[in-house]
Image: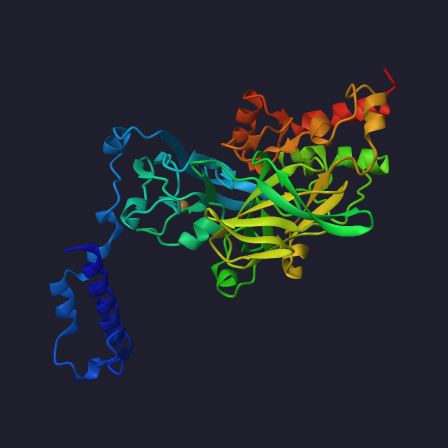
Length: 475
Ligand SMILES: [Cu+2]
């Protein structure tokens, strides 16, 4: 049977099934112009579906190769993606903690980055002492959901697939043979896979105007495909006062926190910024600084730094139950891409529904502090607010040079203070390397220690050093 015929059978089957489910008055206009009144059909519809082979006729499994051994032989690049499913306690605002569920001890889980056409070899291990089983549904794959089956404590499971479509894709704890998927995902079991287009990203065009001899005209500016990249993942928490998942709050859409990369207000000023801007580490100068204090270690807040006139690319995903109206105060999103297709250029705000993603390309033209928000006031006030700082808006270069922190002025504070590690994805086909990375994110202490051993800079150790240099004598 060819694919077209099976497709037609499926449409028929769905129509008949609809009639079965919703009563017998279902009438469907057919392509030929006749209508089908199921009530007048003298047949057993379920028997008819059974004889056609049922809906399994178009199960993706029939077309997708998922055998790791077979895919390894195809000559494609194989990328291993190893995860563990672990329940841990993690901090929330107000000095409290909550009972989180994680992939590999962090929220969001590790970001997978591959190139279109690569084979992903996903391995999920559940420690023997874990309280529940977990699965992993990767939206970058196209195969039967049966592969996402729950893995029991003490066991390991693996599947492989070809990342055929470029874009950003959610992965999350799966609901196959697992009750309470909502609890697992909304407690932290989510992450993204970035699939770079096989031929790389395209140049960015930004429309500007210029004036020549008193005449204003269009002046298109082009930026190379290489970009400084960030990742922002939005979600909500639904918690009881003692930090447990509250299903009742979820059903009513009454979230208790809005998080970006797992944290409320994670990308706001810290002690070093207070010192630089307000002259005192303890003097908070921003409206919300819940993570200011060295005792917060990897949870100490940190800003995101970019250069002016630099191509910036942001990979985004909405993991939550509420829409995200993504906006950067004072900027225009120069390009919005979903999958590998441009959706918009020069737009002020872009809407992401649940389990929806986008890639935002933009250039910060002027030095300044730019707030990223979910332009829903309830979301802003509950945590969906962070800052990008572009260029040197506070004229700190002279101080940095005078104190010997840097030998000469730099195009962004990233060269002095580094960028937060959880906002930076792994390098891809068109990535510009960040000057320095700080350990920042909703990581367990074990994950943070491992990052430190791998050379990522501990923010809580750097801040006193920076403060010492800035308040000490000139060299
Ligand atoms: Cu789970």
